[in-house]
Image 1 (cartoon, rainbow, N blue to C red):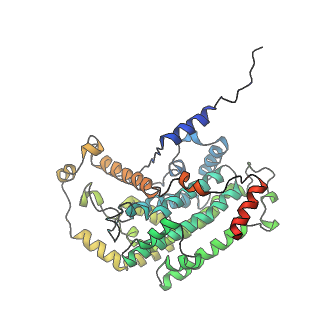
Image 2: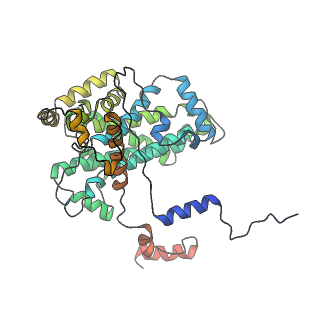
Image 3: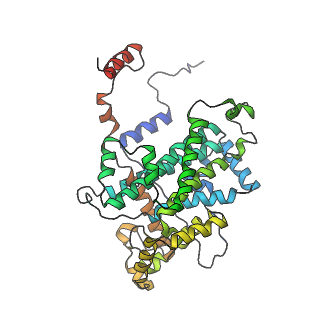
Length: 398
């Protein structure tokens, strides 16, 4: 019988692919964008699989079955949760890129300022994926950093806008030192009475998530009460998305306050063509996702607040100062060298927005220092007691 043992030189195909990917130093950022066809009257939120950025074949059997059951059951709130996921995706389309101080020296700051949003989006996707697979504790544990990143994104956006400078963001990117949690939450929202309950809600969610998942928790919170295996759903864990929806809604409220134009959709393509302002405005379907992410009562309240903001008034005035473009004028702005053959007005707009999304996601994560460089001064032998003795002496200054 032939010797079936493996030698140490053999490399598993998966490991080989990962090594090749690392050595190539190439990362792919894939994005999608969806909008209804002309004349369409019924709308649905993005599919969960599209929000995750995956193909159906990428899901495990457990996740596939869970997702099918959730869509089939259509529990109260499930469709609105899907609208919340869609709305969070569409937020990126309204992020503007003002040329403040430091941009001339480092243009990447225009994109790096939204690092916190894109990282929170990654955490939200991972949390949802854990939930679909039945990992309830991991699902909730990821929600805390998701919400913290959302707070930081709104904090830095408001700080940059108020100061007209990227200085504080640059300090964070250089040394990793940011505001303390209390300051970040305080300044992530305007000092209006309208924002007081929003700030309180976020604070409560952060505290609750800390107690229930990030630290040793009370036995009453243990998953062992309703299931014996970590990878199998119980009826309780099957509704994991309800906690996710509650935390996600709190994050969305922050953005709805700071980006009031989300409630005032415009025809971006007809007014500006393919080369309009970056961000600032949102189209009808993006705004529809925002409105449908809220209850009817909250929708009216947030819409009224948004319409009353001076920022909304100014942006609408800017929009109205332009006139609609003809089809020929719009087509003339298509850059075939960069985008390929002209695919038609609607498809061209969808392609333009999707490309901008992918570009922003890639440049928001541009590395300041590679991991290898950071590890040069890292202590060695951390898998031995002696190594930790040496590290303890260094930390104590001995």
